[in-house]
Length: 212
Image (cartoon, rainbow, N blue to C red):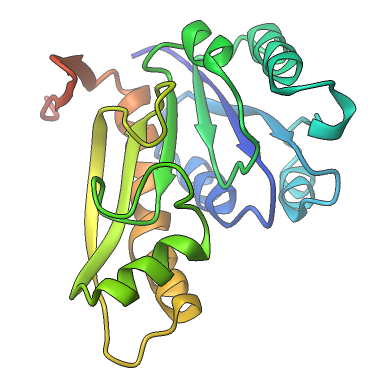
């Protein structure tokens, strides 16, 4: 288990980034470090979080590029220049194409606020996920950390955690509960497992080695 450079891509408040920073400061990642934060939104509060902890950051606004292809190429080049070993999508709401995924096969992870394969895929993001879950009347929802592949939310699942859905939930309340009880726990754990070289992908599924 060597030292790994972790790049975190953000667009908004950075609550999942903060959970990663907290885990790092509690030595959960060993020698691995968050070495780069890239924001697609210049006003993202996540940039303030990075600055508070002296983590280098940069803004790559989507509107500064002609199209998704150009943006993805620039983002790929920035991640390669940063020598990223792991790329974490932490509330990154900007569409990117296969150029990024191909450059970092099984080295990009994302968290989705449902138990995949439920309420995932094209159009299922943010509150839309929780609105759909409540409309269906599910009794549990949760979060899933998965590797990113070109097809939306279809990559190998790394970790999942179920969260109770209550009768009086609104999409906003359910979103906050899933974030607090699942997302902020799963993301640092998935990063830790990756940094410890304990995740392998076989036949489209992950295998997690036990601690030695």
